Length: 242
Image: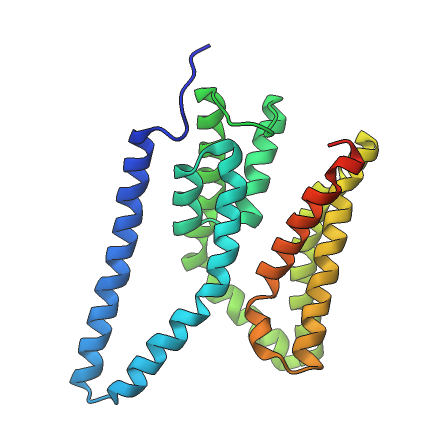
């Protein structure tokens, strides 16, 4: 069987080009925004403060993205997850997409993928699966938003229920992947335990934000829950025979 290296120099070069292009876009619009602020005589101290606060705010999701890259790099190498999560993807989509493809092909993700066909299949599923959100969002988002506004205008309570239902539907879809492993015996309960720990950490963070007024924790609740649940998984995995 022909093998290849997911961490090859060529793939790194491709990833580097993509990341540099994205960074160039960011720098371009930052410069354009500062120039425009000067043209309309905005207070530059306010502009600098806004840039600084925005930079700090982006650190929270950056931690989650970094954890996602580390998780996926264990079997996909570093370049592909680096591209996916730095540009458009999210760990909540990329990992299920890769896992589902690997399961369909009967491949384990416990080690680095060396089969180019499997690697290509996972990359295609990740890419094709995310395309509808890119294409349909500008087409349908206005209608969806207008529908939500109408519901909330008629009855704000039902509007909140509707939004909560959408969120819970998404969570239920991902939870199905976790509980689907319980039929595998004792080791199948490991994901369930990790999910429970993550939910508990998130709940504690929520209480600290609301009750103790530790507002900065709101932006870091997800990274904390991911880090703690991952550490818990590593410590408890031997007990489940993993």
